[in-house]
Image (cartoon, rainbow, N blue to C red; front, side):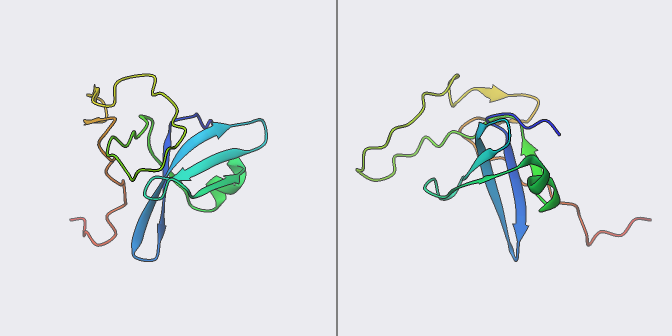
Length: 109
């Protein structure tokens, strides 16, 4: 399983779908950041990530362009404009990806 920096992974927790941005990929560990709470970081391994039920949502990074508070934070410069439209994923980098969830309640005929 190849995991790259900037990809977005998601996991269903209870009634909420939580998305995580891959900040750093090392030889043995991956650092993930919660998209809704940028201060929430954790490290895991690719094997634990897959076995815990995380699903890759997007290969295009999510860049939050909204100003949040007056605290000064060190922010990495994006490698491309946050308003760049990715026609393959049908969203700009500044738009949240739509969660890809299997439709459990649909009936096939």
